[in-house]
Image 1 (tube, rainbow, N blue to C red):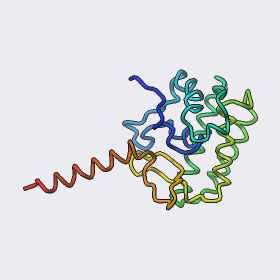
Image 2: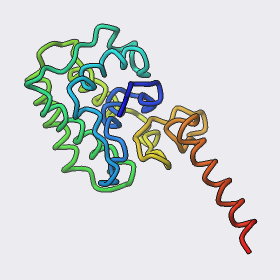
Image 3: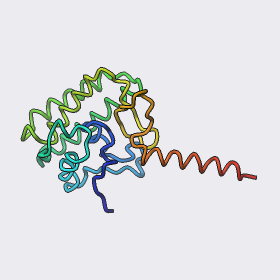
Image 4: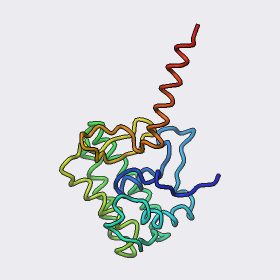
Length: 184
């Protein structure tokens, strides 16, 4: 299957969420896709992040890929980010998840090969999200389940990307209404 990093893949609003969202359909085991499973995709992610990520001004254009020996730990960091922030949005007790996340963050910093690498930039992004004064701005997309930062004025955003998930949800709703109207 052909794949490329597009602006939609960076609709999380923060590098940490874009990394967490690299697992597509996370909670559907039959259709789940890990975009970091392939080395080439993980290696091309930093360049795409420099073009599309909302936080690209914070880490610049020369973001280096994760070193091969750190990739397993980076995937563990990704899962810790997703677990903690998803639980926080859902209102689940996050004490243990926060401890796991902080441990993953510190391990990542200890192993990082370069201060301008993807793993270090992800750590910084995660720390900014943990310290954010408005944690209720972190949301889960009603369509795809990705994490995102709601930067709308009235905090009413329900989709990670209106052009993709919003349109899909509206099309599904329209289809269901037509189907109900035409039912015998």
